[in-house]
Length: 272
Image (spheres, rainbow, N blue to C red):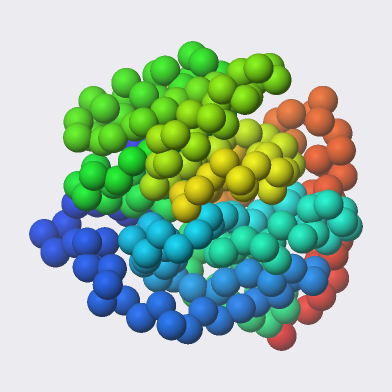
């Protein structure tokens, strides 16, 4: 699989791989930070992966893993239907980019700048070796098919029990929900737009059984090998891929205003 410079992650297969020794990582303590009234877990990536794998192993209930970025943050603060989502999520992680800038403005520090693609690659690699089952839902049929063949090419033992595009009619959606219920996958990767993805998770928990669900937004294109250097270097080196995604879609003007609201919420705070 192409490793696009669009994202940076170090999920490499080392001689001694801490990923497969996750039981040795202490997950008892999960310090929190708060931005604009929204709490999130301030932990390193290896602990986040250990927490997710522990959820899968114990299979006690459905779990939602929420990746929080500036766009989601400003909307979750102001929208009552979205405000409850991070409170219900089992794990909330700040995605690298604008979040670490805002945290520093408050005189604090993220334990690690985590990217969504690094989380996904760790989970995919672990799943192949340990036989975990995966279900992919989102993006277009072309992207999903290309992603599927790309993944089985580079992870030949991966167990993908379902894959569907995000273009769902009511009948198709019912079929997908039933497929999720019947296959009971360990991990569900949901690649829809915000806030559709988070609301879909919120409204369909009854079909997830004891799966772990992660909203992946546009990363299916990355896993399909279709995204390469699409973000200008200025945004890459500052981990501002999310910002480029917003401003490169001017027809979604509301999101531009969301980004400005986020910026002005912290711009004039002095670093403590």
